[in-house]
Image (cartoon, rainbow, N blue to C red; front, side, top):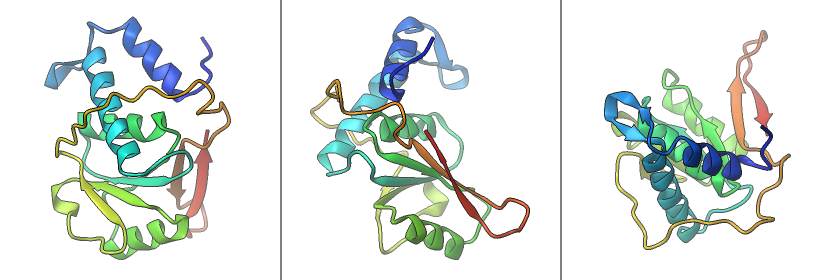
Length: 162
């Protein structure tokens, strides 16, 4: 099946599999994952982020990592996943290169950034909203994610994924 954008894909897939467990070890269902992603998306909207804004994720693997990625891309912002094995200078340079507006971090990555808004990924960012985008908010060819790749030359390149 083809979806118009990631919001529609997340919504439909999580509705279709609502009662099934998406994160087995945490016993979190598809429906609960999507509920949390929409709440985090509302938080991001309330913080002033939207379509085209770049928000990095520097965190260990967890359901919250996935939920945050879903929230970022659901509002049309661009997710920038960062490799956990680089140096703080690498992270700062990467965020500066793409003009990232914010970064979600897990515990051991707190305190690295001073020039960008930092959110702790494990913290609950409940808002009084449940994000529901307008019909034309997102387009099929919008960039959803940016990735830094070393390629064969060793100098990182940016790859955009729609």
